[in-house]
Length: 512
View 1 (cartoon, one colour):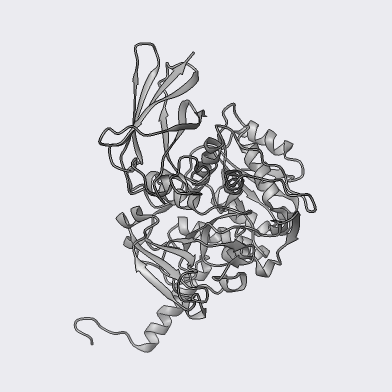
View 2 (cartoon, helix red, strand yellow):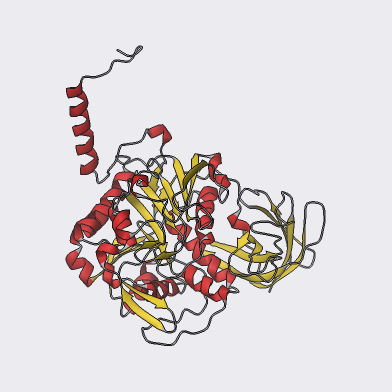
């Protein structure tokens, strides 16, 4: 006896442990189950049609994964997918108008060119410039791994597999720290809003700090973020592909901001020329992550930039949206950031000369290369944070709309950062601040013809410089949503006079 608690015998403990492990592995989950009260609610968004697109090779070799997908989505329509010719897929999207599309592919079939072509296709289903279909990819380094990935998703939805309500932010290696250092601190400077809902910790380490004895440092977290510089085989001076398979993780969703960490096969290195290369499956960081205890993985197939990843997490905190909607938000941000249309995404080919790009173009294309590995209908947790802006629209005497966007939640640090532009930044090579203004247009308001920024002011009434970056009207069912990006001066990293509650941006919206 210890106090009033009976300590079970060694035999009873062993039997219970065997039963627990058996149940969890049968359900596709590893690790120790979390307490239900301290776990994320995991569900599927059943809104709208669901399409499953399957390549011939995946249909042949990943039949087990397809069976698991069909169990999870018995209502889904299956469509053959030819990655060399997306016209039949386009026809299927136009016919079924799905809200969600899940693509089952072999790892050697996916590269950044496929991701870019699919992204462009998903913006062309209706007349607006924004993403129309929320998409995710299922793959694995073996047929068993692909099927196991889907089983984990299903187990999370059925609550056999619980995601602990905690967030670990692994910043990646710190070059200024001692090589062997490894430090875990509570909360997060980069994304403080998460601490309002759950336990949060941040990892910072030296170049040799993430050693074998640290493999359990991200356990008991249902949300995990990786930062740092990356290649297909891992994060520089952090985790590599073989080791990520040995990482101890609870069932979790992983957000990765390192370059190339979504590569599963072919990739393109940008040097003096474009160099086409292939990662060995056993060395792929992404495929290793998909064999581990993940139920979803968001990463890039090309050089990326880290802050859009934090924006994804903040968007999820504000909306409680599905992971497919989270990725759509990222890609819609690329569209607004490039002026209101998808930027040019020229396909890459080995041996071709490198086309010179501005830093903004590099980051726009890299962010457009982010993909979701997992079910796009999956929702993890609830909306718990206030929106960045409170938006009101009042009709003017001339028939236009006067729109006022007032800063509401200054805890959303990344959401106010424009990672694509620096022309209003006080610090060289810094980032502009931004206001993303979105609201539903009145049903009787005509077709929008122009947007004018009337002013931007601080809480104290100081006028701020501003620049209209891009806008567009999204057709979403019977609704019309106006999205506008206005950039503002920044004074430092995630710092500006605009970032105080009550600061405003005012727009004049005219229509014909």
